[in-house]
Length: 190
Image (cartoon, rainbow, N blue to C red; front, side, top):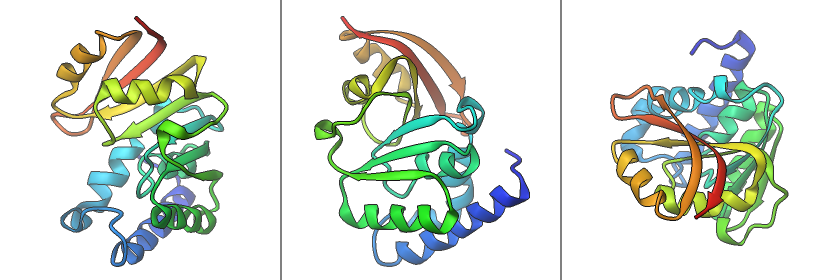
């Protein structure tokens, strides 16, 4: 995805900070560091066209900031990042500060967080879809949608989720051959 020069610079600042911090805390698998841009940053940028500029987003299990901080930088979204690891929260706070993005870091386990519902909920490489839906449902406005980045198990996860949830679903192709973005709306328990 093409981004503005300013956004590119902010993403480069983010990547440099992540590289520095990754030496001390595991934000990204060491074997993935050589592929940081295509595997994590560009992958997260896939969501930018699905997030209108200035949107309010809740990102679950933010870890190293994917996709939450990338959306805050590239979509100018106001993102609430929910992360239980205090060291990762320290990184996320510093990354938000140095990139000048609008982010609120919530150091909490997802299942115990209490936040007002938002129009968009995101997650990447976090959990099986039935559990993601359980976590996302109370955080998602009734007129909102969730964007979940999934891999080759997406169809199996959808089959399991359908036992407990009704939803409107769109499957959008991901960058990788196995990748898919699930856009979930009208989420209700069976």
